[in-house]
Length: 412
Ligand SMILES: Cc1cc2nc3c(=O)[nH]c(=O)nc-3n(C[C@H](O)[C@H](O)[C@H](O)COP(=O)(O)OP(=O)(O)OC[C@H]3O[C@@H](n4cnc5c(N)ncnc54)[C@H](O)[C@@H]3O)c2cc1C
Image (cartoon, rainbow, N blue to C red; front, top):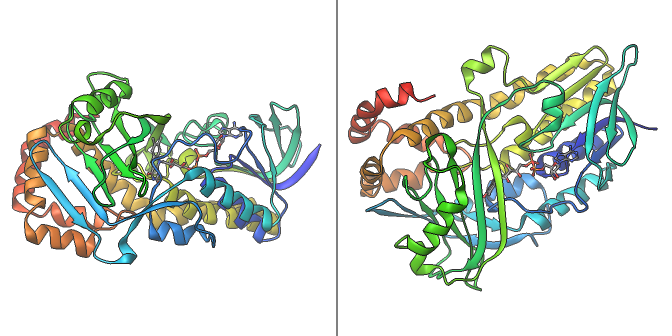
């Protein structure tokens, strides 16, 4: 029987950061990871901001595949090219396998232990005991005061604790393949036949002419639930993707992205990421807590940011012997990114109901010089609501929203 103050379930970016920050405060910390290797298998396009790289606190930059100059967004009839105005606003394509391994090493350097090939099956508080008992597939029984569920989008910890934070899931697929890359621009493709309810992407990985090509769909508005069908069609028929894609394919991946419950459900008790039972507590972080940007599906930056908060607070609660300290987590992370997530949910809902013609109207509006200047000034991939709020004041977009208001209101 092993005993720790804090046990983190899952060794992704959120879990590694949580463990690093808990161990840093001086409490005994363990990461339990079900896979044989941290960072594998990869289920990510690996597009993150410079800010996210700084947030990782990693000195080695061996995980960077490519620095991107900007993005080109394609609707059915328009193309908007957005160049990053400064190096500070650049995005990077990264290799998640190396990135996650580096994060895990940093957690270990601070004193956290890691067990691999161990799937957490049960987290339970036994009557009269002042610790949680964690059972794994390896047969190990581990005890802890605080368990942090950083076990991703299908979090078993959240299920066991009865915590409902996710309303819906996006289904995603991706391959790596040869792709014509003129410059290091990420490409985004929107449209109901391309990626219903979300978007498709091609992200260059450097000079070798390889890109990550993928998409997500929202099943609720898709004529077909399998995203692979759309990927195959895009690769063979999309006027831009099919022309640039050269036919090879490797590193196929499929995964899901959580869409969090909305603010009104949170107020009614769903969406809470902390449970306290006398002397013990369970907390959720990262995808397990649905801490993702609903507009882009990105979760690495929020996961690391919330990982720091959750780790620090879990350690404080253990050091003070007072689990009520854990309640601060919910307030702190929501203060940092709650408004962004709540606004992002509205944009996602609007995206699900508008037509391809509406997308054309939006991208035609965005291709105007003043709109492009606004994107350059205020565009921020980690906090996209800032620029979206400005756009929604544009008369053409107000008209578009007014025309879609009924569909918007009656789409769950
Ligand atoms: C196709 C796709 C593309 C994406 N592209 C991007 C992108 O470009 N940029 C971005 O920021 N985000 C992207 N995301 C989202 C991003 O991958 C996640 O938000 C991020 O990985 C979340 O980190 P995490 O640490 O919360 O969870 P994960 O990285 O999912 O880590 C969870 C870990 O928990 C382990 N685990 C699960 N259950 C158990 C258990 N019972 N016991 C022990 N271990 C367990 C898993 O093996 C895993 O290692 C993408 C997602 C998908 C599906």
